[in-house]
Image (tube, rainbow, N blue to C red):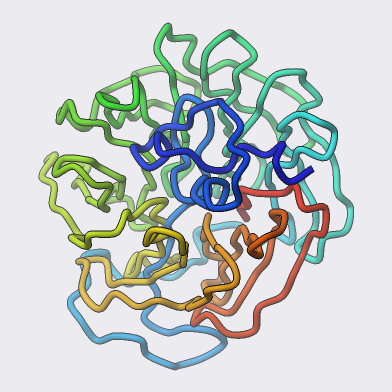
Length: 338
C-alpha cells in the first residue's frame, strides 16, 4: 500500500506537486518536502520559537525578523487535520491530537490535499483537483459549506491562512513559473505577491502578519525566502546545496521550521526568522521526516514520518525534536495541520 502514496517527486522540490505516484521510498519521503505542485505538496515549514518544548530552553539568540507576540490570537483546539489515502484516494480528514475520532471530511473521488485549519479553528482551506485542475476550496471543520475560492484555469496550490483569518496566501501557476498570491478568505481580491518567474511555492504567513515565507528556485535549487507583505521586499534565508522546503512559522514569529532534503535523507530543521542558526532537530538516517507544523501553543511540532522502508504516518514531537510520539498507524497519512 505504501507505493500508492505519491509522496515524492522532483517537481515537488520546485514547489509544485506532480500527480504521478512515485514508487520508491526515497521519492515518497521527498514528497514531504515539496508540497506545492500540480499534484501535492507535503511539508509545511514552521518554526519561530525563542523558547522550546515546555519551557525555557533557548535555541538561539540571533536576530529576529518577526515580532515576539503571544500565540493567544489563535483559538486553542484539540483538533488536527491531515490527508489520508486509506480509502484509495487522497482525502482530507480530521482527528483529535491523540489520533481518536478520525473523520473523513471530503469524500470526493478526486484528490484533496494540503488542508489548513483557520486561526479560529472553524474553517479549513485545502487544495483539490475535482475541477480538472488544482483549485483552492474552503469548508467548515465538519466538512459542510464547501466553496470554490479560485476557479482559475491555472493550478492554485498550497493555501495558508493569514493570522487574522481574513486572507489566504497560495501559489498559482506551473512548476517553473508559479508565483505567490493573496486573496480574501471568500476568494475575492486575488493579488500577486511575487513576480520572479522562476517557480515560487509553499507560502506560509507569519503569525505577526508582516511576512510570508515561501520556497523559491531563483538560484536553481529550492531555498526558503521571505517577502514583506506591505512593501514586497524579499530576502533569501537558506543557501545550502541541499533542497529546502515547506517552511512553517512558530506562533511567536521568531523561528521557522522547514524540511531539508540531502540526497537520500530528509530531516526537519529550525532556524531563526532571519535565517540564522539553522539546526537539524531530527537527525535520523532510518526515517524521513517532513511537513513540520507548530502547535498553537508553540510546544509541539506535528510532522509526517516515513521509516526506510515503510509507510507514512503522522507523528509529533517537542519543539526541540525530543519526545517523538506516533499518532496514526495506517501507513497512508500525511500533511498534518493543527
